[in-house]
Each structure stands twice: as structure tokens, then as C-alpha cells.
Length: 425
Picture (cartoon, helix red, strand yellow):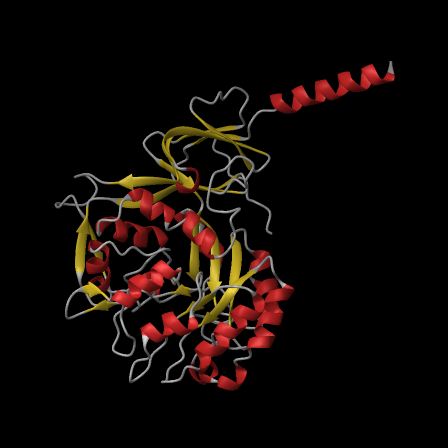
């Protein structure tokens, strides 16, 4: 008799669990989920902070909130793998607990971004401070690339100090925080010297993590071909890939307008090319011919900081819109901003809408039409050199969902309009 009662209880409990209403159903949006090869009108249901269903015509009876996404894009939460967020009040420390970095939650959710990677603001000496001060206090998921410089990105002589570039100590710190540290970063070194690259590469090998290289500057220029063939492994990341500066070799031959053969070979080998737009690290003179030849970046990222956000770069959606204006199709732009970066940082649980995964979602409006921009019907995009192009479409964030909770709703498209802040983690 006890067994019968037990089985009846289990059956009832199972049916009750199945009958529990969804917390959110997103209705009628155009879902683009590159990992799962979804590109069409679908509904998305969320329960207990996770994706519960991605199907057509999901029943909304008893649902706590319904989001009308008709005419909008529904994508995985965007992932920006090149940001600077170790903000602080030390005026002489630039991006490392200093004034040039930004508090994450101030720019992420309004751009559909749910995961960011701080690109080397902290090193092995100050990562614990960065963790307690920023990572632990942010609603945005914040991960980190450790700077090969132990004191991080403090600018000036600190970032030129070879004695503070310790591969072993960097790798040891990375191993202490495997859930947060996703790689090693080299940035801003100026000089014809391979030692910083060698030490960053060594730290990456010791920690079994990818390395992101910002090639800094050098006169004469250091060889990109040597970097790609001698130092970078498959899965390592070359950021600022469309930069054109006098002290850094570009990927495109300016004279011929063609991507250099060894660059194609590096991408084929598995070296990842990241936009890392920044302040002066992106030029249309590199990007437009490269895209026309079929050379696409693996990942789109901002290199956002207090300077770049108010200049040509602005934010993640503006950068994505620029690539659309240059001819990159929307699914490819979404892939380079979701699933590709998730793989680049070895977080395959992110960047997609698979059932059972955490519900990080961006709902985007693709603006376009004669009423949008004064007389032309086009949107203007420019780079730091002053070169301007126009595009017919521009992305705008309507809603961001983080861990199954609405954290940004631009126009109140959720019914009822209830914004519940996610717990910090």
C-alpha cells in the first residue's frame, strides 16, 4: 500500500511540475540562434531562469509575463570579449582600478549584452581586488583575461615593465579562479621586443588558456607573420584586427587592398581575429576591403572604455550595425557576437538558446525606414579617421533578459511591465 501511495505521489508531483507556468514567454519574434541553426519566427519560454522551450505557438495561459516580440530579433545574450571594467578612483592607474574603465551594468543591458570579458585591466597582483570590487558586484556576467603585467593596465611605464611580466605567477592566479579567468592578455607594450609576447604565450600554455594579443606599437613594426606562425596557437586571439596604425602592421596590404596571404593561413590554422574596436584600433580602410574579399572577423567586440564609448565606437550594437552596413549579413553578425565568442573563451554553455541553458536573451529592433533619419533614410557610421559610410539598418535593444529575469525593457513590451533585478553573482 505504501508503495502505491508513493508512486501516486511521484506521478502527481511530476504532473504538477510539468503544469507549472512559465515565468516568461517571448511571442512571435524572429529567433536567430546560430549554434542550433534556428533562423525563423518562434516563441521562447523561460522557467526557473532557464530556457524551457523554443517552439512555435507556445501556450501563454498562466504565464507570469508575456513579451510581444513581433517584428523583433530574439537572440542569445550578446557576449563582448574585449571590455575594460576595472573602474576605480585612482587617478594615475588608467584602466586598473582607475578612471578610464567603466562599471559593467551601466552599458551592458541597454545593449543586449549579458556577458563581458575584461581584457587585461588586472594582472596577478590585483585580480582579487577586481573580483571583489567589480565581478562580485555586477549583475552582468563578468569574466577576465589576466594581463601578463602583474600590476595590470595602469598605463605608462608600468605596462612597459618586463620584470613584472611573470608567466608562472599569471598562470597560477588563473588556475585559482577557473570559473572567472578565461585567458591571458598582452596589451600596450611599445618597442621592438618579442619578450612580452613570449611571456604571455608561456602563461597561456601553463594555464591551458587562450591568449589575446594587442600588438601595441613598434618602430620598426614587429612582424605579424612571425606572431601568427611562431607564437600563436589555434584558439589564440588577435584583437584590433582591423587597425591601421603607423607602429603596427595591418592585416591588409594597403597598396593592393588585399588581405595578406599569411593572415588567411593564420585564420585557417585557428587563430581567432577579434574586432576590438576601441578608440583608434579600427579603420574602414582595413575592414571594408577585407570583408569584400570574404575575410570576416571571428568575434565582434568593442574595447569599450571612457574614451571609445563617446567617439566612433559607441557601443556593441553600433559596432554590429557597422558590420551590417559593410555587407555582413545579420545571422553572421549575431554569430560573431554570441556563439563564436562563447567558444573563443571556452564557455560553450553560453551564447545559445538550447533548452536547459541559462536564459540570457537579447531582443533587438532592426531600425530602418525613411522616418528614422531626417532626410536620407540612412544611418551614418564613421571611424576615428573621419571616414564615413551609410547603412540602411541599425540595431537597437528593446529588451535584455539575464538569468531568466527582465533587466532592461526599453519600451515596456512585457505584459505586465515588471522589471525584477537579478541577484548579483
